[in-house]
Length: 352
Ligand SMILES: Nc1ncnc2c1ncn2[C@@H]1O[C@H](COP(=O)(O)OP(=O)(O)O)[C@@H](O)[C@H]1O
Ligand SMILES: [Mg+2]
Image 1 (cartoon, rainbow, N blue to C red):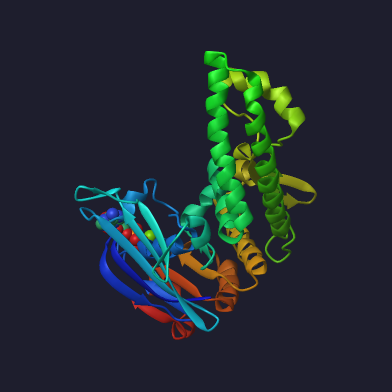
Image 2: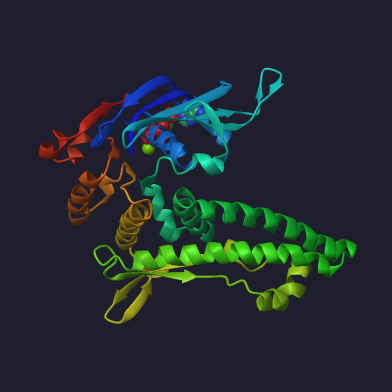
């Protein structure tokens, strides 16, 4: 799959602009706030249906505009597909509108069916949060990788979240209104079924990462799984009713990055230097790239946002080897961070 072009209308800082990418490497060069991350955000949106940074999706619509459009032409084998997302605030003029619409070749799709037509791996400085951020950052990460490539995971994840909300409401009603505990049965069943799929697939991803010798030599990633089982649900029932909240399950999962040194394991969040933490994230991202490639049986698009200044020489060399393996779009403020010989091989896109 190759992203041939991208059209942005009223998307963040873009009024109406079209970009054409190389099948190999495209380098987006521009000063701060010139729209580099916005551009990659739009590409990412087409792959996952979500932003990697907007808290509220409306943020992505240009100020004082009503409708944003992101359209990408994707070459899949011999055919071209047009992927399109429309964003509104929920209202245009006095008319109520859908906040987000997904279209493939002009035909409306559900998010579930839209995602997966274009795959990417995104890597930017904010990914350091994977080591130093809260558990929810790491859970969202596992979801973002797996939802993009696995339809069954998407379905299970959606269903799990719905059941969780219903079950939490019910737990409150049992506590406050004396509803019967037996009413939990159906939700427990859904939680167990979908939770099992989610945990299994998360474990598979984590196992894969640990088996990447090139990147994960002295690093290990430990899955801190919040196990769901009928026995555990029984054990936690009183506590959950008192809390009005489901206390166990994949929504409480986490993982830890550790460095192994002479038989000793060191938690990088607590005891890693910033440099070690960056290296760990770098390795994690490259392992993710290999995981996605293996799962979809082709190379996904690689998006690198302004990471060169933060990498040491060895990591940069490593990236130079990985980049040509798939279509890559990378951004930088300073073109001099890219080796001159290499610069000639890439398509430059200048922003100002
Ligand atoms: N919804 C929006 N409407 C208009 N401009 C926006 C919107 N969201 C962000 N911007 C602008 O985009 C710019 C930041 O772009 P960004 O892609 O993060 O820059 P960089 O090149 O540094 O990565 C800022 O000037 C910001 O004001
Ligand atoms: Mg940026």
